[in-house]
Image 1 (cartoon, rainbow, N blue to C red):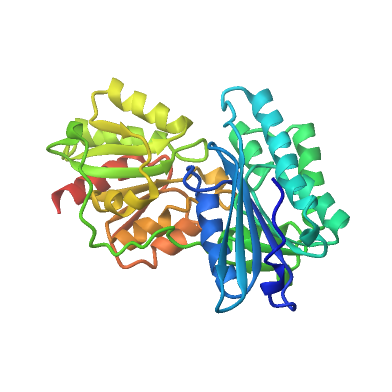
Image 2: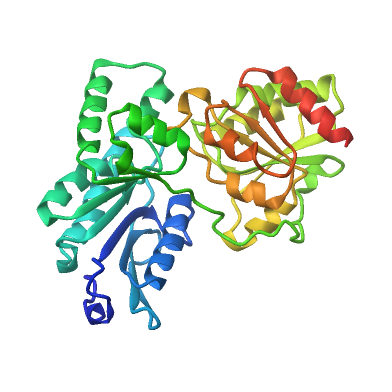
Length: 378
């Protein structure tokens, strides 16, 4: 279903159309799409013609929002897609390349994309390889909001650097140098881009915000019955391969075997490592509850139900991945425990926050247990 061009005469002629391409759009779960929707609305309200293109598990759809005061227009186009099978890497790769092609073909065939601004993200992975070609075909200005670094995250996950991966990495940096402008999520990402040869004037740090208003005074959501009698350490969102497990699991065992035994872990989460830590804690008899991620409207109440928030990141992923939930955790006002490296912007932001914050070096399970003991006695 092609975009309608009926509203183009409402726009300021000095502003070029903007095509913003992401993976999953709300109500489907995905932080990249949530933040893209917020940014697109702000840009359209300021007078831009914005086309937000993404995926949905529901039927394909298109809707248009107009801002008469400024002449801005936002068109949201959702393409029906089935999620990939994460455990099957060949199918996952095929899904990624087919989906990238489909998303960018939607941009390509729209006549307004000629000499337009195009913003891509790190989701789906490897969109960069398609977007650079689109830049030259449509003579567009290309902005890369670099939400994730690929193939660096693959190399970090595998723990080895093969010849093929080195070759892919070299190709990726050649393509990155064809990008007109970068939006980094934090200073750690900016440093990685500069080290890779991107010029300083090409990179701006543009942080996200919480995807919904959070005051810190919300009525808490109901806690899982299995954690009754315990304080709640909440992990919310994706708990994938980039997120630390060993320190958290071992620290919780120490907290219950030789410590205050006050905290249980609430995993309101998806992801491979969520399955892993849930299984390990249950095997050890440690209180743990697992629930599906809440809808966005219920997110503030979920955060308010925590006695402390848990954020984790494996050191080898520092800069390559940024857990966006940090903004909501800070706004909630609850204590934050970060198991991860000091080089991450998670540490930079949390250390400036007003609430209690503790960073644990990955591998120091004893320090994690002591932190829980201290927070449990407060």
